[in-house]
Image (cartoon, rainbow, N blue to C red; front, side):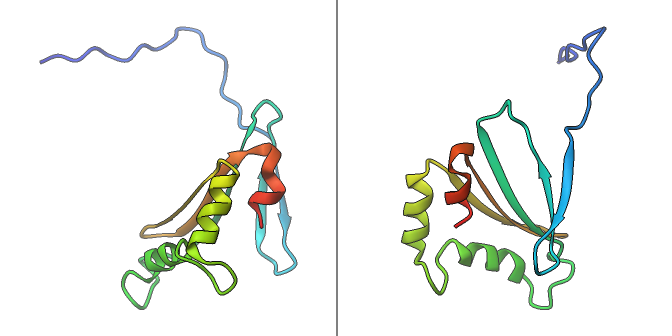
Length: 116
């Protein structure tokens, strides 16, 4: 069975990465910021460069992310889920060979609340 080739535009605008800036938290952790006023959506990602290849206990990177959704010392898993739902946001954790990440996506107007 032959599948059609994807359409490729003969003249397309060149792809340009958006402007970004780098900042550091008081703890020294770098923060990369990409601002785009044309979008109403905000995505915040925390990526740790420790994953399956560096863990001493197999599965600990993925397990740490999964446990964060079940709660912390100051908020239960239900409290976290309710707060995320109230903002109409999505909170995800993931772990792979090279990293572990926490990502929250929601409306930009809720930026401050999304970081609490």
